Length: 129
Length: 196
Image (tube, rainbow over all chains, first blue to last red; front, side, top):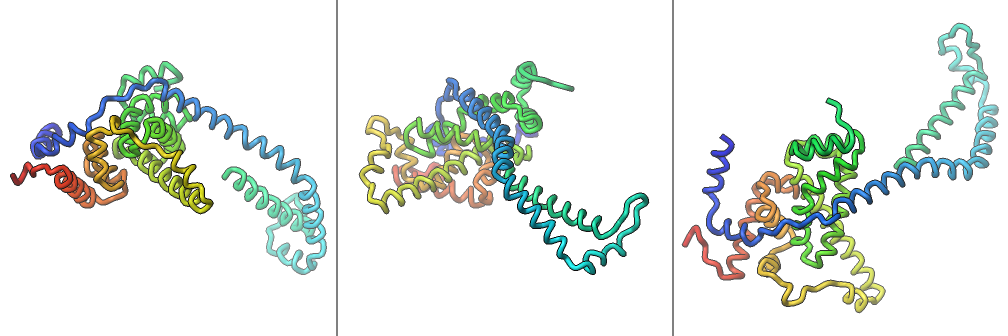
C-alpha cells in the first residue's frame, strides 16, 4: 500500500521537479572525524556541567557563610520580637502529637525551618538554571 | 533486553532504528549513541547548511557542529512522531537563523562604532570559479524559499515534514515551493513543463 502511494507521488512529479532534484543533489560528505569532534565537545560540556555545580556550591558556600550566619541571627531576632499572640495563635489549631511539645518555640522553629527551606530551594534552582 | 556500551552501538548501528538510539542517548546520556546518530545524518545536515549559508564550507561546518550541540541539548523534545532527520533539520534551520541574527546584530554594532572595513574583511565571498549553477539558482530565492527548496529537493523531506521543521502550515510550504519554482523559471527563462 505504502509503495503504491510512493509510486503515485513519484508519477505526479513532473520533469521540472526531477530537474530540480538533480540540481540540488549533492555528493555525500565524508565524516572525516566530524562526528568524533562533536562528541568530544559534548563530553567536555557534560564534564564541565557536572563539575560546575559542586564548584559553585563550594565557592558560593564560602562566600555566603558570613552573610548567611548574619541572616540566621537576624531572622531569629525577628522571630523573637513577633507578638506572642501571633505565635501562640496557631498553636491552638495544631493537632497535639504525642511526645512532641507543641508550644511557641516549636512554632518558631517550624517557621524558621520553612524560611530556610524556601531560601535553599530558590538558591539551588537558581544555581541549576 | 539490556544493552551496554560499544557492543550495544554495534548492534544498534545495524538495526537502523534512530528512535532507539535517541531513547538510549536521552535515558542514559549516552554520547556514543548520539555519536552514531551524528555519523548517520551529518552528511545531510552539512549539505543543508552549506546550501543555506552559501558561504565557506568551514563556516557551514562550524554551524553544523553548533546544530548537533543544540540537538544534544534538546534531544528530549524529540517526540519520535516524525523522522529524526526532519527534526534535526528543524534544529539546523533554527541554528542558522540564530546565527544570522547574531551576525546581523554584530554588523550593526560594528557599523555603529565605525568598523565597516574590518567587517568587510571578515566576510567571505566565493570566487567566480567557486560559484556553481546551484548557487546562481539559490541566489534568486529568499532565505525562507531557499531553506524550503533545499529541504524538499536536496533532503527529500515531505511537505508535512518541512511544515514541522519550519513551523509553517503545509499549504504555505506548497505555495512557497510553487513561488520558488516560478522565480527560478522566470530568472533562468525555463519553459513550464506542465503547461508547455
